[in-house]
Image 1 (cartoon, one colour):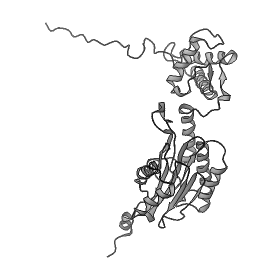
Image 2: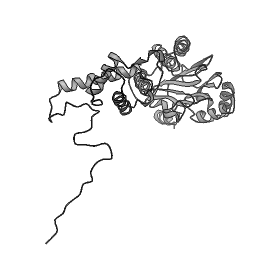
Image 3: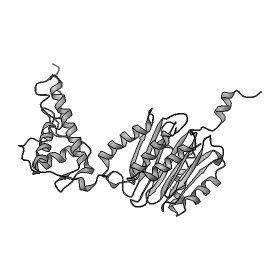
Image 4: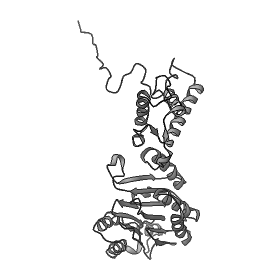
Length: 346
């Protein structure tokens, strides 16, 4: 007697529709992967990369060992084509796999197993490889490739544009769920402690690509320095006066407005940067990034709205910004030890 259909389905390998692009920016020495899928937390499975080595996307009935094993082969100087051939030839389930690789020099290669669910296919070009399965059709992959080739800007802009172009052509025919963007560069991570220059993910969302873009904008503002140095703003005159006003409103500055980049202003601004995780945007030449100025202005405007639109419950509670020390408080570590007093029994 044949097993029920639901039991047969449980025995078949799990599949998830995915489209991805792996790419290398030779000029900036960066390697990246961008991916979207009707699958939970695709960023935990598909993208792999190592600075100076290459990047890999493993998908369809994903063999996650392709990630570390492929990077090890790339580390030894193997080309993208050699890595794809070595990994798939040794895999008995290769017909269910899909793989994209770029190597240290920007060579690219892809593989689509003949049992991948339709539509499935790939396209490679100079410094990139695009691949996808369970798609609306071949235009999804070709749109991804054309967008990457034609979009100006750096690797984050081009990879995100590629995802959007693929989705406009239908993307995963079952819908959307998660997306991820991984870009590696030498000492590109936080405090230069790793090579993960960009590592952002959306694990579950009805519009994961747009959400990924939103998260990346916040990540970019806080963690990266992609702005043109020519746009740096000198802190003097009206700019200094406005900066002091905003810092005072937020509770970081308490001196008289001087319209200059004096030590009290510099110290107040440094405190603001540290508390808002902008250490990467700190400068010592009396200039400030336009993005930080905009963020400071937004926070000051929000604080002004809070003060004018909220009824105070504690006298004076609304007259201080969030950068001020708590009332009656002291810097961290300066709290008093509480002593319990018990009466002595007679």
